[in-house]
Image 1 (cartoon, rainbow, N blue to C red):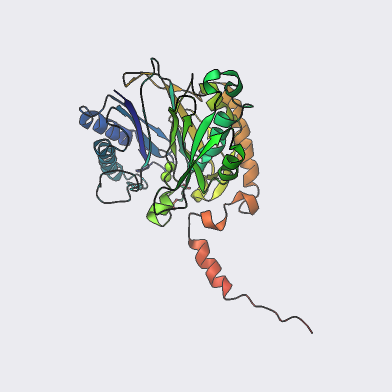
Image 2: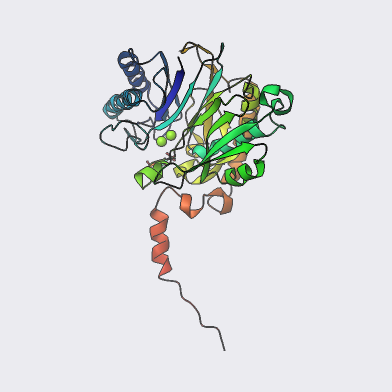
Length: 369
Ligand code: F6R
Ligand code: MG
Ligand code: MG
């Protein structure tokens, strides 16, 4: 029997603007999943990162299952009622459609799912990021799965010698899922050429070329493509199976020490460094900085152990200090140049109207004879 790991997340309201959900909201979602998921699920884990609540579920129904998606959707609807009752900001923000229609994809919540034959022991990582978009994982995944400077396992471990297959999605294509498969290491430069553009090309999944097994699943939704207007950044979740045929946990975590610049933060419109944070962290400085959390698990027959906080170790305190410095340094240049995203990625349309008005006031001067 194959095991499915499904994580579905949404921002359905938070305290103090976009900081984090209330305890009551989290409890509402948690208890809804427990009560209504009894028959469907083997196990579940409800958590938050920034203003997003993620429902991690294990079951045997396969990815994209209507009942599983419906359970998560309805848990978020129940949560929204609590969020409204408490006066939370942005109650129900990511529930973009009125009624559930078979699958939460395209309805607002982000989804990442993995189906696999459980190994005798099955270590995996659950990442959740806030105030950024799915392209934030491009760099860490490239380094962990294609670069022996980060992952010595690529040259040392026979189980990884053949490298990995990257499935990359063109998220600007809204008519359907447009993807390409590229193999590392042979097509490394092609992978690089796409992944450099975080806002357009996003890693959707990564597969072992030795065993054919899937390691990585990333949520690839672009909210502003669904809603056609600003609805907040996409705040992606990711599942990564680790060890043996896959990179080790430490190899997958290592790139987060960079604190690389990602799109997001204030008004979803800036370039700011990604900070690895402890589980259950909120948001603060400049509606950011963009954050990523990582819960590590082991599982047996679908039952998960308790979550271990992968970024709670003292090592990451130093990284967080450096990321804070990088964030403040970038903020010194305000909206100029690299600090703010290009026009096409700005999440608020006010500036477009301003520019359209100003456009009429430009004058073309005739050259002097
Ligand atoms: C970014 C984000 C926040 C808001 C900002 C303004 O993803 O959620 O930075 O954009 O707090 O929020 P509104 O427009 O709701 O007042
Ligand atoms: Mg939000
Ligand atoms: Mg969010």
